[in-house]
Length: 303
Length: 217
Image (cartoon, rainbow over all chains, first blue to last red; front, side, top):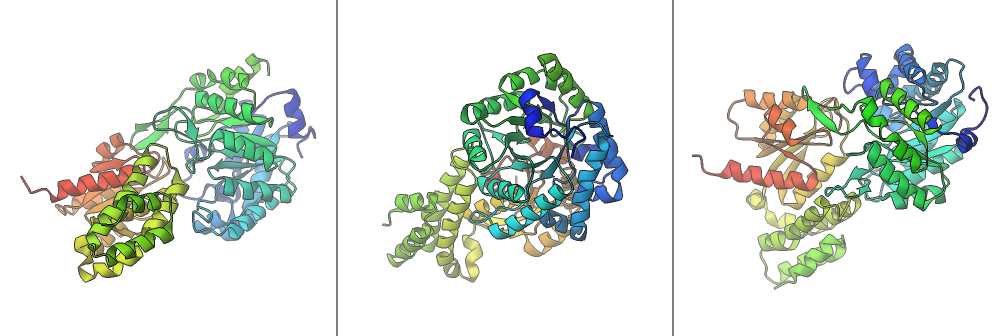
């Protein structure tokens, strides 16, 4: 547990929180080769993972997301790290806790999408998806996370299985986070599977999630996050969390890079907070400097 | 004359059994395999593609429609015979590039391409330039499609493009797609085109085929 021992949901009733930023790009800056398994670094380079998370704490993050996004047995198998499933997830929770260095803070145990479509649309049997999700949720909860965050979700089927898994594992708090793409005419957001923020809010509340959230997605910046947050607020009473990208990607040296400056990203924070958001973090392209700028904007807003 | 509009509608709604039956009925009524394929199935799937592009339909509806298309194709396929190739739109070789294990989008492109009448060879995820070249030697595609989801793996597409370029004039067209890619990126690495989504990818393949088959100047 976090040293403060006050549960995340109780703290959220009295103040707003800052969550960390991107992990993948930071891992690569620290030497992770493209395409290799970032989660395996929890075992091979725990010091580097902790150093990244420590920088986010220093920048003002109250919440750290464990380096376990692709940590399900199903995804680790693709990289040949299936054997290390339990150790990788357990280490992920421990590293994040250590990164707080004894200060109060919340460790959010990360569960990403399984990377395959669950039946009836895809070929992954629901029972198999469920067992992978339950196993990862259980491992993270036993390792002592303060919440389980189910991220980058696009279908209510998989999200529902993951919420159930986190609840069954006894997670103290369950965060349901969806990835929305901006429509071709730029007028609305829906997930790849066609889920609207209205549906997601209703589903998350009805299915027993404690916090409804958004992260990543095509064309999801801080301003877009405010738009979706307002829809969440109109459709449910759950606390809201947002982790938009650092703007839209641009092409540089044969790579798509997110280049929105911290100050530009932070400019959208008041709008997000006015929409009723309780936790503000960031996703692709963000770095500790973005977290610092979000922290300042949040404090200036009045916490 | 079969009611192709109704058949297209059934396909759009993903009514696999109806589409299969209508395909049989149309053939029994004396329609040619090619006509049923083009007007009954491909025409229906192209409406699905358009609506997908404009956010009217999303991935689940497309997958269900593709399943209905497949049900019709199972009736037609045996009749296409060994000369079946002559009835296909073109040949597509597709894969996700090295270092990238994502395939939901690529699989959708495969389905939509099959829905447009392409013969599709999917070599899967994490594919090196050597694998692409070897598969191309064997399959003899008109178009090679490359996919990447990660901002960090997309640059490998240039390695594949260069690999094909070093082969000299193969006539094979190279197409790319995936969330972080763009037309500008396609231009920069020397690919022949970029598809913004599964439906856009099929439009691109068709336009590349036209270019490929156009008489040399």
